Image (cartoon, rainbow, N blue to C red; front, side):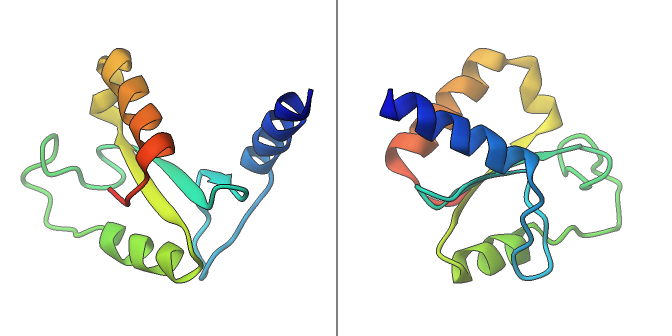
Length: 101
């Protein structure tokens, strides 16, 4: 029952607005100090999908900002969603092992 309460708490955190260093991450696990961000390829200038984009995104800066608050960050790009099995493995590995990506 305690695990269900913990899961419910984490789901609610994903729905609340959390701001860290002026940035609003998508999903924040405050118990395990982990952040998951979903990135639209066009909006965030994915080098794979938008190789001609001249705008640089602030992804490395975001990892540093969140890291300063003690969080690890996982990014999942829009184009990765085509292979949900791989995305699930990536999230599971991040939850188990951590490290910012």
